[in-house]
Image (cartoon, rainbow, N blue to C red):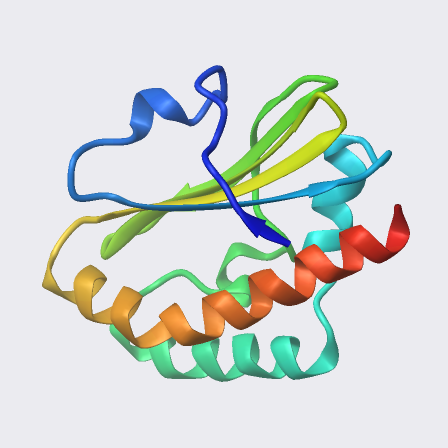
Length: 145
């Protein structure tokens, strides 16, 4: 796993504004962007437990949860053979995950635009878990390749 720069042709770039959160990791793999995304979203039990806890805690605040959306995963916003962009907007923040395959490298980037103080607090609280979940996803992709 390598912290990386997201190639400039990624479909997410028009959304990125000053002050937004954007992190990118990359790994060499023969997997397609879609295959890498599917592996990334196949969280281990400990991560699924954290997400259930998150849903329980934020539901009273009126934030979207997996059960309120009626489906696991995230809506696909954009997809080509080389890139898949998923995510959603909520009242506290907008977020997207893009998986871009370029020159044998899969780049996974998470973008977050905080809409208000709740979004800033939320992102600060989940950041340590975000990093652990993302590192776990990158390891699964690397092992599959």
